[in-house]
Length: 402
Image 1 (cartoon, helix red, strand yellow):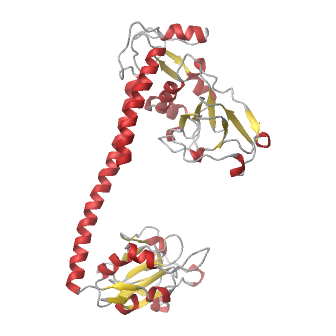
Image 2: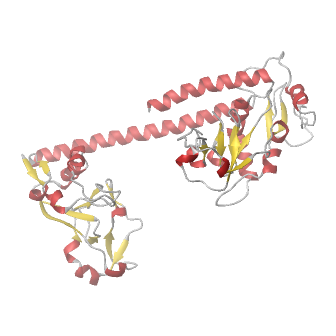
């Protein structure tokens, strides 16, 4: 039958906060909205009050099998059932106590977490929204027989367990996709993703053309300096500074930047995937100081917290924060291939060793320029990029299906 929330509860009321936030190091648990979650009470960051204050606030006492419902703010609607072995506690004014009668606590919990309840809530306020007590009391509730309540709760728990397993599987699969992508890049920079072609012009000849002073290391297995790993025939080790303009960026005062120009900040880039989350023009955001200018096709490399892997190829001209380094590459070196090298675990490991700073670690210009780059022949660069894009496309389809 249809009934209301107040007809199935002997108590509906919010708590209060002790004057002067008079908390104790131990004593009676005092629950705030940050302790109330749908999965249950979270005891981390719990506050306590003395037994004396508890007695003064006896009207807000929490007992076993009560439901605690957040009725204000961003966590409005979160609800937890107090365990049956709980002794006593109190709640703040942002949490409402519901003490069920003629209804199973777990069934009332299911109802509160339902989309029907969410759609029925009559919330008031514009700044910090809230669910008034009267509105909560008058909310309609479909009440089944007691035995059916038990069956519904049991089936809900069974299905929720199944959903949890699915979510865990999806999370594991997402992690696996990320690991496979990392392995693809690892194979690529080791020369194991596509076969070599002896007819390709060796990378050392390519390097001599673009920079006669470029540092070239080609004697596989007999290097005169320590290198990370052995390269295939036709490949060469060189430095990032030898093949790019790293560190030679142009800066502009924000007053000189057109309102319609794309202004890229670090928060606009998704970590690990390096996807652009949002594009903002200068008029969309308040900015001060200077920004670096970049051109379409340049590599945008975040020197700040490099472990976040915010490295991408610019899709259009724009301006970026000074924590991002625009890198232009010679036309005989594929910019996308070099971008993949900089995104590989090998280069991430290098930056983690060379980076300086604890809270906000970053890579210095000199260390970046000295970073060793495994360079294949030009044609093999293109074959590698094509294979990476093919495999990443298949992995992205799998990830999207999750």
